[in-house]
Image (tube, rainbow, N blue to C red; front, side, top):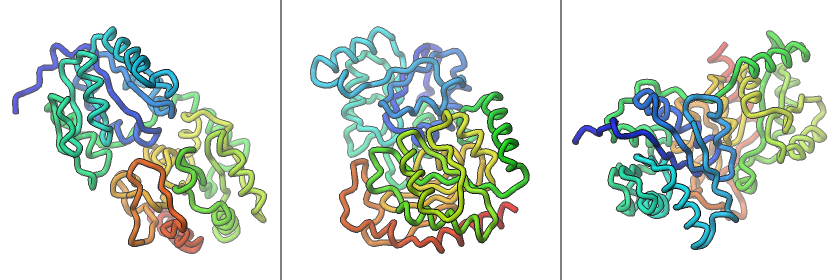
Length: 351
């Protein structure tokens, strides 16, 4: 394979249309790319899912272009986007794993980007002139690494990254001190998921309430509920169902403050969500509750033992679009006892 010439690469466009977890999965490849291109400008083309918050404030992002669905729809909207991309004079585009190659490749070609790197999904990557095979059974982290390896970049550091500042860590320190949590068993819990995936990725809130009560009564833990502002009602509902009193931090912190708080937790329990991968990025022990999504593709990285799921014939069934299922047996068959036992195993391992 001919060695890629980085001398002409001044402006890089990175297309990443997923959420916070997907951005975190991209960070090992991003870190290696930045090491190779320390002076280049990294611009991101993103959806309106706040994924940029995972890396803002770091050297992994310089600019962002957020595609608002209403602004960039139809022929005129796409023309505006193409015109904007042309104005930036990008030399290289990299489309993150799992992204539609027809749309992204065609967009980059029309934007006049000389080098266009992406996955040849279903043999539709013909608008890319730098292609890699797509393996749906490979973890997203490894798939993203394959992209930069196509450029001749070796990724030695596969650790995940989430941006947090000294101020964020001081905030977490102060919160733990104010609530007398230092040196105690503190378990973070996220009962939510992406708002567009709420109907099929979330374990029942009744079970989260039972789980939290048992974590408090049986393990003597303090439970902190985390989540975005849109999940405030969810955690309030769960709290009202409980006999014990948890701490509620839903909607009260920035993502980087949340990351700093999770970093101080003894363990973090979550559905398949962005915050599960935030926890992995700060090296907190995790337990991930999985149903229709594939933990082999989007599970905790690199600790696959952190997953709790039941083998159901129809799972995993998630393929990028909302799951329409009348029973969600994959999630409903996971009991509170199952999760408690997994939590105990992980705590023993990290004692």
